[in-house]
Length: 320
Ligand code: SF4
Ligand code: F3S
Image (cartoon, rainbow, N blue to C red; front, side, top):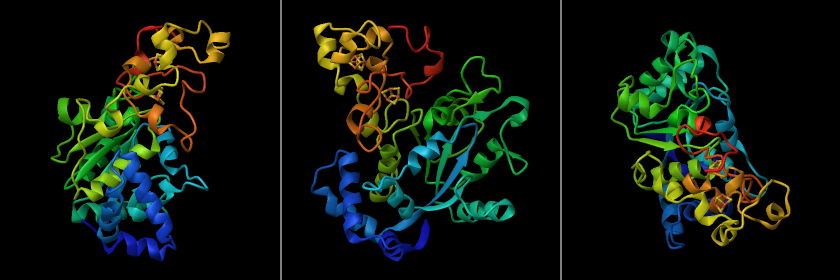
C-alpha cells in the first residue's frame, strides 16, 4: 500500500514539529466535523500509518485545482503538511523527474497497487483523444492504466467531476468527466470507488479532509451523495449558512451590485445567485485561510460545484 516509513517518521525527518502535526490533526477533525475527542485518534492513526501513494493526473484543465491545493499559508500550512503525509509519486507540475523517469515513478506506484489516483481536468474523446496527450499517449490511456489496482479515485474540480468548462456547449473536444467515462461510457474499467470533489476550483480543505479521512478510516472511501460528493462537505446548500440568509428570509433583495441594499448585505438572488441550488462548503469552510466566500464578498454563487454550471440557462446573472 505504501512506503515503508510511517507518516510520523517521515514528518520528523522533514523537520515538522509535533505541535504542527497536532495542529494539523485538530484542523482535520474540525474540517470533517468530528468531535474534539477524535483528535488523539487521528494523531495516533496518522503517526503509525504508512504514507499512501498518490498519482495525480492532469487532463484538460487550467491547473487551478493544483493551485488550490498548493496554496500554503504562513500561519496555516495545512496543505503543505498534507503533501508530506502522502507520497506524491507523479504530478505533471510538481515532480522533479521528467520524461521516462517520470513515467517510471508512475509505473512503480501502480505496480504495488493500493494507490490513490487523483485526476483534474476533463477527458476528450474527439479525434481518438488527441486533444489531451502525455508522452505520446492519450490521457484516457494513461488513466486506464493508472487506475488498475487503485484503492481510491478522486476527481478534483468541476472538469474532472462533470466535464466543466471544456465540456460546456458546444463541447468542441467531446470532453467528459471521470464518472461519465466509468459509469455511462464504460471507457474506464475499475473497481476502485470514485469520489468527486467538484468546484471551480474546489476548496483545498476538502481534498485535504478526504485524503486524511481515507488514511484514518483504513483506506475506505467517505460517505457520498448521489453525485459521488463527500457528504461531510457537500451535504448542505451554500445558501443554508450564507451571511445574507436573514435578508433572504425578510425578502430584502439587492437590485444591483452597488446599491445600498447590496452594501447592507441584502440577498443577491435577483442578481443571479445560485446558492439555493448549490451544494458546497464555501459558507462554512470559507476561502483564503477561512477569510470569506463569494456572497460575503458581494458576488452571487455561480453554482461551480454542480454539473453543467457553465451552461445554466440564462447565465450567471439571471435570477433563478
Ligand atoms: Fe442564498 Fe445567495 Fe441570497 Fe446568500 S445571497 S441568501 S446564497 S440566495
Ligand atoms: Fe463556487 Fe458558489 Fe462556492 S460559485 S466557490 S460553490 S459560493
